[in-house]
Picture 1: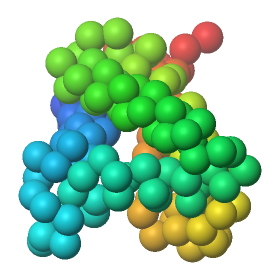
Picture 2: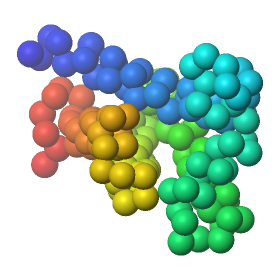
Picture 3: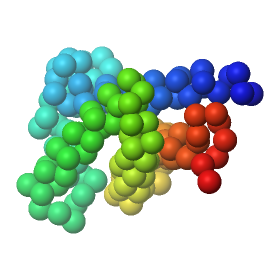
Amino acid sequence: MKKMFPTAQILLRFALGVGFILPVLDRIGFLGAPGSANVSWGNWANFVAYTNTLMPYLPSKMASFFGLIATIGEALFGVLLIVGYKIRFAAYGSFGLTLIFAMSMLLFTGYRSPFNYSVFVVSFASLLLAVLEPEGKPKN
C-alpha cells in the first residue's frame, strides 16, 4: 500500500485537476461551439444561464458573479492539483466548491443530477485528498 500511495495520489490529483480545467475551457468556448460534440456550454452565456438555474434565489447578475467566482476557483484548484502545489489548500477548496455545487444541483435540478455526474464523488475524493498526509496516513 505504501508503495502505491504516491502513484494513487498523483492520479487522483491529475483526475481532479483535469476535471476542473475542462469545464472552464468549455465555458470560454475553447472546446468548441455550443452544440458541438462533447461540449456542454460552448460559451459564457450558456454557462451563466445554467448558473442561474442552480441559484434561482439570486438576481441574475449576482448568480453570474458567483459563476465567475466558481470558474476562477475551478481554474485555480485545477492548476494547483495538476502541478502539485498547495495540494491541501486546493483539495479543501475543491471539496467546498463541489459540495456547494452538488447541493445546488440536488435542490434545484433534481436528486439524480449530482449522482449522474458524480459530483459528490468528486467532492469527497477532494476531501480525502485534503486529509491524507504524503505517506498516506490520516492527518491528526
